[in-house]
Length: 344
Image (spheres, rainbow, N blue to C red):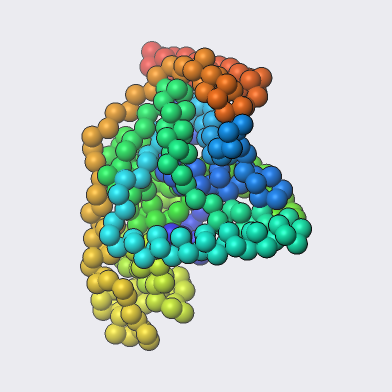
């Protein structure tokens, strides 16, 4: 779900090619879920290999990642660890939504409603263990660094931007800002032309940059107050927020009263599942690690081909072409870096 801050934050459109030479800490599960949702047949069926295992996530991961590297961008994928205890309610809520969506999917297929079927298929998708394992294997073959977060991947990626190990945190969720990500990039893994199944129209999805310092300055609040606004709206750790309270009203209440605790007595039906300080603590002092390496290695070309083509039934021509373009772009960026080092 994530916190809904869209109506409050300033968004700057960016071009991926302008990020050449930059390091992106990408929320891995966030990206994989996007690929699983988008890369599907008209009836909602995902891509599969000959054994029936889903490969939509691998298709998105390979072609998008190779495209980023071709543009000189340095991606590092950050994987979730053990979720905080306070997230249990949200995890259960998501599970119930998937169960209900699966039932609606079967009904839509039975009556031949393909747009509805696709929508329900997206809503019912789940991440299997083999999908994560396959994704990590592919990233290893591509020579990319991977970071295992002790808890929330978004928190770890945000930590990496704060420590200077990454230039941007790439995720769809605004929660990254609450975790302190200095620069949040959205739509990195899904940019391009996309069809809206429910409306049958195409839209352009472009990368967006949200800068935390700019957000705080324009809203005239502190990072702690932004977290309080998020708690009022609803986060993964209190999904419902305060019912009936929108982003603008939540911001007004925090600015007027200073803190969440001071604002609650003035808000009707202000009930939170956990003490505000326990939710705030997750964002201010998340469980992250500084024990990781940031080494980019040469890709194992034949290893990638064997995995995607021989095992997962990808097109060898397409895979080799993507790898060739990726390596040409990477070599160009390395040459540029060397020139800047000596003559910059």
